[in-house]
Amino acid sequence: MPAILGLPAGWTVRLPTSDDVPRVVRLLQRHREVAGGPPRVDAEALESELVGRGSWTRRQFVLRDPQGEVAGWAGVHDRAAGRTDVDLVLDPQAPDDDAVASAVLRWIAQVAGQVAAERGLPATRLDALAYATDERQQRWLGDAGFELARTWRHMSRPVEPAEADGHAIPVRAGVRVRTVHTHPDGMPVAEDLRTVHLLLEESFADHFNSYRESLAEFLARLGEGPGHTWDHWWIAEIENGDDWLPGGALVGTVLPENADGFEGTYVEYLGVHRRARGRGVAKALLGTVIADAARRGRDRVGLEVDAQSPTHADALYASLGWRTGFEMQSWQTQVRAEPAP
View (tube, rainbow, N blue to C red):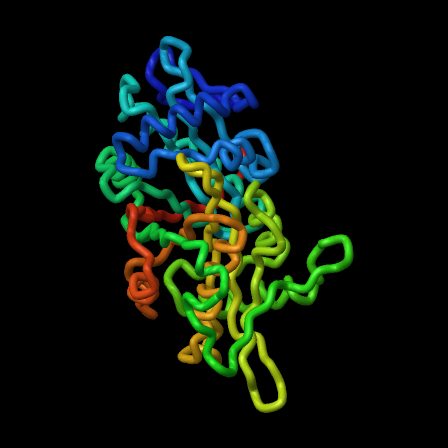
């Protein structure tokens, strides 16, 4: 583990271990209490990022304060070619937190430059998140050269058992929805995976933050999460004469149990191809995921939406019963490739 230049006296860093999972869970809970995020932390997903499959594409460490307590977590996620995500969380009571954040963000920029060099790219974009009410995190990012790029609304809709019949959002004529086809062993058929990937790539081509992600990167990243399951991948098809053409796709995951003991469903991706817009494809996919959640005994469906989406997707979700729980901000900057010394 390389030294982090500029850390205040007494602060140390080390690679995370499985013993750190409950410590970082508590760290995130304390951070969210002050920053305005949701109180519940998905410990299984965090474990994947720290020491499991999700750690494979991350370079990260935990920070210990002068008393030896885990008071921070930071890392660089090599998400896709030219796209690098940033993690930085410090305990709200951490001493010298401004100086620690400054040193860590310099390290993050350096390592991201090394990732870009390894990929043979001239540069990469860093993307960091901050809760909309977290002025401390926003200040750190601004001081490090990041700029506010977008706001995202995290919305949730309650699900009632009676909605299992699929009538909550009726499917318009000329549209049908199915899960991806699978082999007898439950693994998905490759053609459908390529279809979902292509639909989502083309659906978001004219949206903010669009970037090209290879099929391998797409599948590897989505497979990292513990809530991933192939029976939450849906394809919407539209009637075109005597044929049915792919018109949209939805990829969902399983949300862990809440305080009431109910799981939920989360919409990771929902995309409608330009040729299918205006035909009720998005509503058909949303109605499908609501009915599926109800049949499984779940109590909610969550999603994230661009608050400045050109398609005004947030208004659609609101009209169908989704409500905003909290907002996140995307902060971005560019760093040039920098080969490791």
